[in-house]
Structures are given as structure tokens and as C-alpha cells.
Image (cartoon, rainbow, N blue to C red; front, side, top):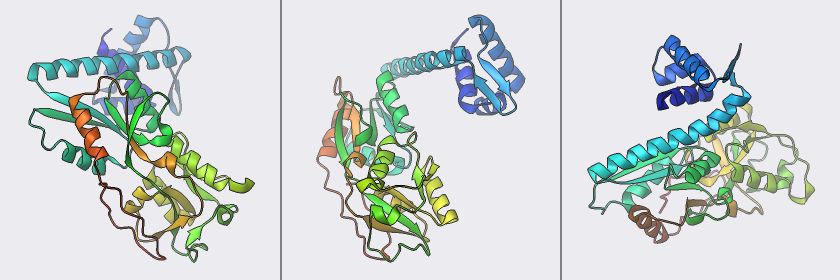
Length: 311
């Protein structure tokens, strides 16, 4: 057994089928099946159960998945460090939550623009809980996540203050309001981000909706902002999203401020261990600390969101 078998195993576990796993790995499915059979023979137990819907991990497969992820991550990190050492490359590996990559890469580029050494910046776009796991495994140096998702004991630097906004499709009954209150939404069915995709964001939304003991209609859930925008446009329902993502809205959707809401958990922060900070990460942290405050949200009725710089 070698590291390749573990990569094949993880690809199938993530894809949910041998066919999708083979496509992801760009290998023939019969060859992939033989490799997994060899792996199962080596460990002495069945790792997958086949169903008409695809494949599912057995109890033994779940155990191997956790250990294999750790082994592959550490192997790749060790290989990268060894290669960089030989090339004298200074590398910074950063995690980013989906939808923030373009803007944050501009920030990182500006922060490191004066760096004269040979540097490399790798970006991993993952959900908050996956980024926290990557931090714990030391496969990334730091991650841009929301303040409310930062685990205890980790250091963080605020990158941007964030505001929760209501987004409403054309013709919605609440469009005449300048601000939306929890009572306005108590009988509304919303489209909301799932807690698994964005824990801090969903928690902030739920706290706003349940103010004063308001009963809330069970929302439709989505795992990403683009899915939310599509569902809002298709269903005529409203949603609550961070202001930053309003830059991505189609013209048929309008924003409104909310009444009393605690936005602090939504602030975008750069989180790191606080120990053994690399020179590149230190330079990035100093740059963020010196940035100008973000622009104030304009929320006059009918206003459209303009692209505002992060700095």
C-alpha cells in the first residue's frame, strides 16, 4: 500500500461513487476498482458499501477516512516544504471561505508586493469548519473566516467589519420598507444558508429572526451564496446575507437594512495559531492592521450596491 491508494480512497469517499471518483482522478474506473480492492485486502475489511445511489463508507471506512486525510495532508505538506527548501522559496498557504477569494487575493498581493524574496502563495477555498481542521493539521498557515467561527485559543486580526442585510426580489411585499425587522419576517419563509456551510452566519440569522420570541417559518436552505441568489429569484422569497456578497446580486434583487442585529460574529478575520508566525504572514498581518476602515453602506430605497474596496 502507498499514498496513492489513500488518495484514490479519499476521492471516492468525497465523490460518492466510483464513476465520479474515476473522473476526478482521471483514471479508468476498472483500474480504480482494482486499487480499492487491493486496499481493502491490505487492511482486511470492507471500506465501501455499494447502493443504487452510489457508495457509502462502512464504519471501518469512516475510521480510515479520518486517518487517511491526516496522512495525505501531512505528506503533501512535507513534500511542499522539502521542495521549497531546495528552491529557497518562501511559501504562504492561506484558507478562504467561498466567495471571498478574488477580493482577498488582491489584498494579499498588495501586502506582499514589496517582497523581494522568491515567494509562493497557495489558496485553499473551503467551508469554515474545513479551514479550521486544516489549521489544526497545519496544512495552512492562516485562514480568512468569520469571527464567530474562530475556535478558542486561536489568534485573529479583523480584516473587515460585516453587516447582515435583507435581499428581496422584485415585487416582494416588504420592498416599501427602509428597514426590515424580525416581526416583518416572522410569517415569511426565507432562503437561508445552512449551518454546516456557514455556522456563524446562520447563527446570526437565527438570533435576529428569533428576537422577542418570534415564531419563525422553517427556511429553505442552501450551501452557497449563488444558490441563495438563484432561489430568491426563482421563488420570490427573501434572504439575509452579508453585505459583501450583495456586490454579486443580479439587478432583479434589492437590498434593505435590518433593525437591531448583532453583526460582530460576521466580521471577516484572519485567524492563525499565534505561534511560529512566518515573516510573510507577519507582513500580511501588519498590512491588514494598517488598512483604512471600510466604507459605510448606502441603503437608500432602490439603491444598488457598488463595488467597494476591501481597504
